[in-house]
Amino acid sequence: MIMDLRVGIIGAGGIAKDVHVPNYLKHPDKVKVVAVADISIDNAKSLATQYDIQHVFTDYKEMLETVELDAVSICTPNKFHAEATIAALQAGCHVLCEKPPAMTVEEAEEMEKEAEKAGKMLTYGLCYRYSAEVRTLKRFIDADELGHVYAARVHALRRRGIPGWGVFTNKALQGGGPLIDIGVHMLDTALYLMDYPEPDTVLGVTYQMLGNKKGVGILGEWDYENFSVEDMARGLITFKNGASIIIESAFAANVEILDEMSVTLMGDKGGADVFPLKINQEKHDTLIDITPSYLPKKDRYELQIEQFIHTCLTGEEPISTARQGVFLQKIINGLYESAKTGEAVKLS
Image 1 (cartoon, rainbow, N blue to C red):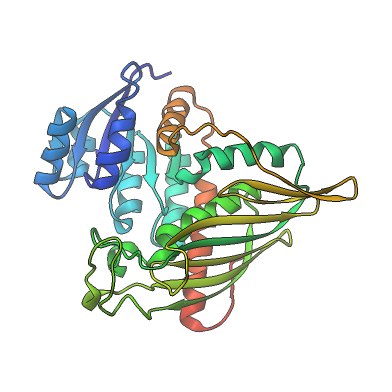
Image 2: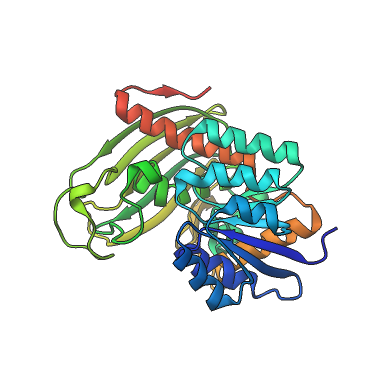
């Protein structure tokens, strides 16, 4: 059993600086962040200086070869997730890779195989699983309060929320737009609460109606002239157990609410809206709604890092598994393929 987790960071951008490193450092008795690698030496040095990280690299392969590490956080653009994850696993490290798993299904499957071959843990940064609402609802579902959850509706919608920083509008580096960036969070939340059924068929459409035009930017000005991703995606997903999910995701859409992240579940004994949490049931010939009067509000990112540390040290299975990552990637890529061809896509 590892007694003192030595962690390396691949990618020194905002998610590493604001989420991964500071939350690792909340556990000085268990974790040491000892190395960072980024293709930008300035970014790497800045992160290292801010958090007193000893080793700095521009090549993560050199980091993996020269520094003794037990675990690695992958915080790069999506295009580099698979390559960096596989290299870290082959170097004998446990891996926490930011969402989405990869760019393609083949990459996600190869990542899963490498984790199994190395005997190391691979988990993904699907942080909404750790929210108080999801953790509470999961207990109700495990107690059969909703029965068989056979349908869900997922929204990740922004009225004018195209990121004005990073590479979020670059298809070559990200693989897509809102579906693969924010839609993936709510999709994973629904799948997790539905016990991750195996996907069967998807039908998707995508739009580029607003992102390639100059307009109001709540999240800063974006490069509309080089906007290469969808600004909206919609889809229907069916599963081998008969369940289904309807998904809508947008960086920019003419809707009333500025920012909506929501999941609605429907089961044969009850249903639920997750954000905010409300459980809907029929009991004693009465339709009732149950809302919690109190939920603990510990930060979901902090809990995610805590869980990663715990599983690294104990060998327990992570909440988010590599197999689930493959299912998630199949759905995302299937929706994009369906939107491109105009036809439903069979995933199995």
